[in-house]
Image (cartoon, rainbow, N blue to C red):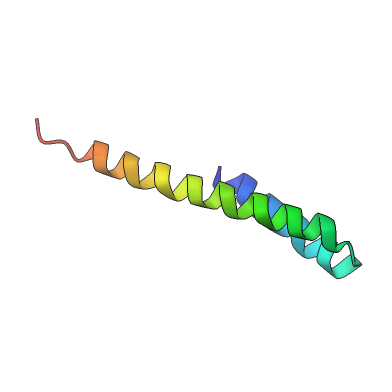
Length: 53
């Protein structure tokens, strides 16, 4: 998921450089959403992995 976030941020940067502001804004929004989903899932996996048995 982090890889997809990085891919969309690169697309946003390239689109911004080329002047496609609509595509750049959309790609940035998607990258932000994917990044926050990644962070939430990462924290959940850390908390679930530290169970004391």
